[in-house]
Image (cartoon, rainbow, N blue to C red; front, side):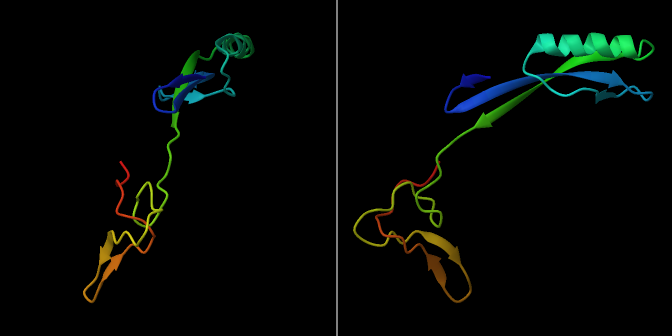
Length: 110
């Protein structure tokens, strides 16, 4: 696992694939973050099924962690001031819906 900018992290998983009759490749083993373990699984699969085509594949997953706004209604990061922020949330034919959280209209969420 490696960490990249802004709280994101990458995880690389290795696994064995087997070629199907139609030419597509299907996962044929569990995943591991250790490429040498996947190589051992590949060798074992080739010994068990010498007439099949196997290969090692990898999958990279990026997870990004970010803060959510303090006020889920209006999306403001800070709603802890002196009065209602009044951000427009929705409009209907008869009225408009404004945020009732306490605090000034702060910077909206990015």
